[in-house]
Structures are given as C-alpha cells and as structure tokens.
Length: 183
Image (cartoon, rainbow, N blue to C red; front, side):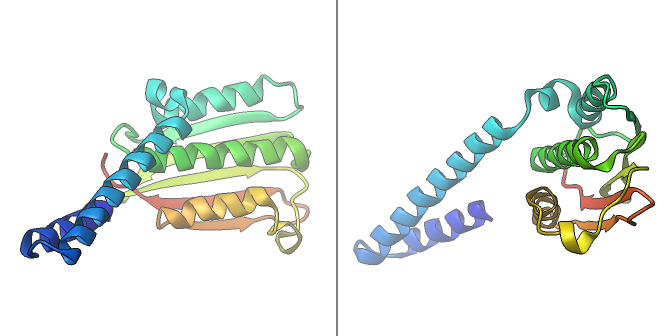
C-alpha cells in the first residue's frame, strides 16, 4: 500500500508543473519512503532471531520445548505439517507472538497438565490451534485481557480469523487461520 501511495505521488509530481502541487507531491514521496523504511526497521527489530535461523515451525518447536522443560506440571507438544519457509515475515512474527502469548497464558492461568500446539499450511492459510486441558475461563470476563486483545489484533491485522473455545471445565482451544502471502 505504501509503495502504491509513493507511486501515485510520483505520478502527480511528474505531471505537475513547478510549484506548490509538485512540492507537496515530493514531500509525500519523502514521507512515504521514510515511513516505509521505518516500518521495515521496526519489523527487523521485532522479529525474533530464532525465526530467521529456524523458520516458524522450528522457532515454535524451540518455544514448545522450552515450555515443556520448564517443570510447570504441564506437558507441551507440537504438531506441524507443511512448508513454512515461504511465509511473509509479518505473518511469521504474528504467529510466533500469538503462540508465545497463548503458552504463557496456559502456564499462568490454566492449571493444565497437557497442551498442544498445531501448525499447518492448508488452502493458502496458516492454521494454528493451541489447546489445553486446563480449567478454562469465561471469555466474557477475560476478553478485556491485554493478551487476548493482542492476539485478536494480530490475527485481524493479517486478515485472519480467530475463535476461542474456553469452556469453564473443558480447557481452552484457540483456532486461528491467517492467509499466507509469499515473501
């Protein structure tokens, strides 16, 4: 989108004679390039290095292994199917952060003995499920929590879908689907 705006401003500048309109178009071009470069730098800083080294599935596997060895009383497992290598970095970062938040919530709140993370590439989507056998929660009470808000915002920003099944005595299941754009 930013590139399209820059090209539109460039076209206006090219078609405009010297003067205020041309100067404003040039300012828009500079601003757009600055925003684009700042956004790229921010994404690089926010992107966990483990994603670069291991890809999404490897990074999540490492995270699950860390949680499984943390002696929380909960066993964590991962099931991953598909090729995650061509995924756009913003989707990979969002997916990684969502899993991170979900696992953190399980350890802090669920009192679960078993949790599973499933990742798959299906029909042009990254599909994720994070499920546990813990105490569950009332979504109406917890929906204002910053963690769930952050998860939802990440999913919606990627044009995805999220559903949370959190029966009070049946554990919690989070299902997410995000469209994949090739990097």
